[in-house]
Amino acid sequence: MFTGSLVAIVTPFRSGKLDERAFGDLIEWQIANGTNGIVPCGTTGESATLSHEEHHRVVKLAVEVVNRRVPVVAGAGSNSTEEAISLTRHAKEAGVDGALLITPYYNKPTQEGLYRHYKAIAEAVDLPQVLYNIPGRTGVNMLPATVARLCGLKNIVGIKEGSGSVQQASEIAQNCGERITVLAGDDSLTLPMMAVGARGVITVAANVVPKEMARLVKSFLAGLVEESRQIHFKLSPLFAALFYETNPIPVKEALGMMGRIDPELRLPLCPMGTESKSQLTRVLKDAGLI
Image (cartoon, rainbow, N blue to C red; front, side, top):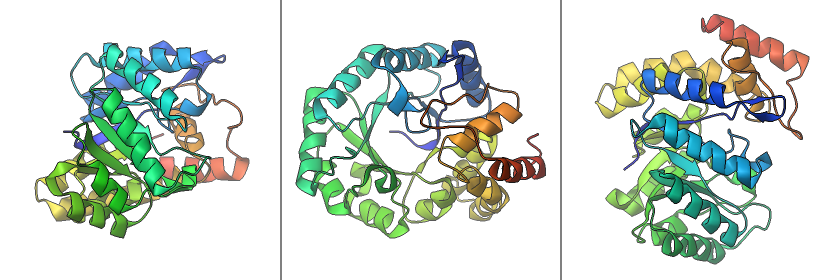
């Protein structure tokens, strides 16, 4: 249902508040450059420091600006099952096409707990749902066997696999087949994961190179493997640079240098260190982005 290059879009702030104009402009730029879907309120969108009111507004604004031109898959996860259900219900009411649901963080549920968490959300809200596995952020790894159990539920349509393991993505694709769409959760592993069955990526890099990320995925899915590989090689320094420090610090700094947003962050995230910023600047210049 959701394939291609879907941008995990940043949430721009100005003087501590959502910069609605900048957010709308970012979405328009993404769509104009071939991005296949908009994913607001994810990790890159600093969802952890948005109030519920802000979260709701970002989702609603994304739906309004996109206006059905591409899918909107809203971040709606939480480490509280009831809160995740509430956020997912709001996302549906706002008119999204799907919800992205991170594995519960900090409380470290068992595999059975993960299954029951996602089953409860799927049964509570009739909306296409994309699982999101990123153990480096959450402290829990959702195993392929658990994903295989979940993909039998009709609302579970995809997974953003951010474990960093191509083997794990391969097992999910093999075990679930057509019942679920695997999306890469790491820009640098987009190409390797597509080689074992992924159908795209939910990407940080598309915030700054939307056209190139869309081409990378489109080329591979069209069978133009060498073209996709060359784009991957070209973008590899940028993939690394956008994680010199915790995401979304570098990508917001990059967008600030490009004149697209005020690179404002919310504590506990803070501006890049001098050395990291210097290295990022060099990569962006080499890429012709600034």
